Length: 88
Image 1 (cartoon, helix red, strand yellow):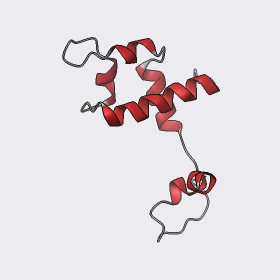
Image 2 (cartoon, rainbow, N blue to C red):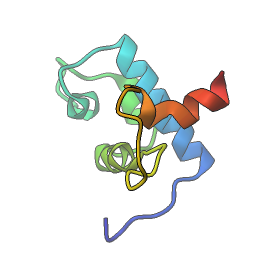
Image 3 (cartoon, rainbow, N blue to C red):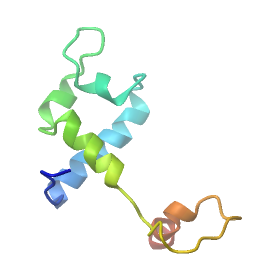
Image 4 (cartoon, one colour):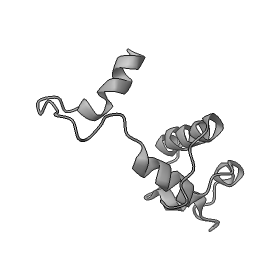
């Protein structure tokens, strides 16, 4: 995290693309999408110009709500509620 840099629009598009594509082409772990082993090799992941480490850092830091504010324990989707409100 000491070398963190802000995410720009293009990088966020790549990140979201990886998330969506990983729902179509399913591997046991995210790390396998970047492997060059013939069993797991998928050329698209080597062309997106995003490292596995950068993807995981963005994934770990990707939040929609402040975890320090009080929450409604009956709402199971409270962590993504702000996103859902924007979409729907």
